[in-house]
Image 1 (cartoon, rainbow, N blue to C red):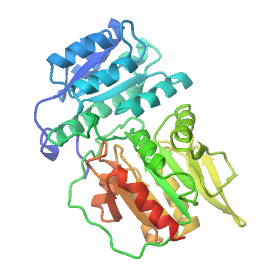
Image 2: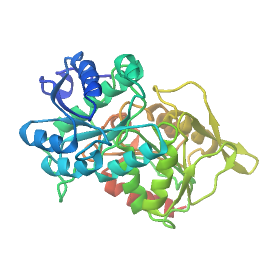
Image 3: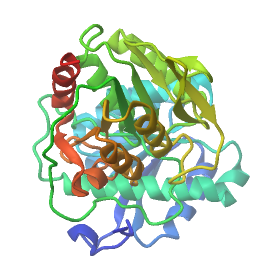
Image 4: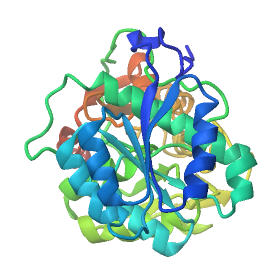
Length: 386
């Protein structure tokens, strides 16, 4: 079932609008973004300030669900303000504004390591801000998803140290109502789990944080199988994501290359704007990249990766769906199950948005639904059986 994120009745959410604070040194940008948000009755802008120091003061005075935080500002920049904002309110969701450059990608991923929930590409012109439907759809979708996640988790205890549990990074701009919190009871699948020959991971909003946690725990050498990852991200960002994973985990992680032979003990990441699939080539298994139409409004998307892996590896597949908006991974996961493979998912409490993992969890195809900190030991145990 697809729910409208703005619906007050959906998932028992409060009827009052999601409260947003804008933090940007450009008054023009703040004004245009305010106009976009004011068009949606499910969102209200309660504060609009020009630097990080002013944002700290505003958060101390206002009840805020989501902060849209620019990075480069006078007096106090976004990276300096980020931990201070989370110290005041550990549950507030912070959405970074980032340029689509290597520097912007690096800073955004550093911000997510520090506790930011997600990022949104910053428009390159006021024309994009005023009329760019892609920007508008992505902005509204992410603010609603993060705002609802904030409210669902408001009564849950935070982790020691004040930092919220890791949350994931989102698909490219939802254009239709997004399944934020799939209905239905949790149904675990009972079956004989085959030792995997490959591990596939799908993630979106909050995904980088979850990947850093998972792969940082799953140290090099504990798993000899190859790991393939589709994370909803634009080009440039996936390059920097691979570099960050290598740095925080010690794994050899890189963007996949077309026709590259898959090697055990390595991490391959789908490049931004390309679907990544797997093909059999003689005795080898190779990665293929393509620009077929987006699926679930995303390219790269998780579903095409999973369908191809199920066809090549059969039942020797272990899939993990991490935090993210939407339901990408559900249909591909069903194909994996039909081939005899195994699917697990991140639980709701540690997901930034329980859309993707919630979709597979409530569809009854998961063998386990686990907190992000428990996923690595579970995978290691299964992988070691091979």
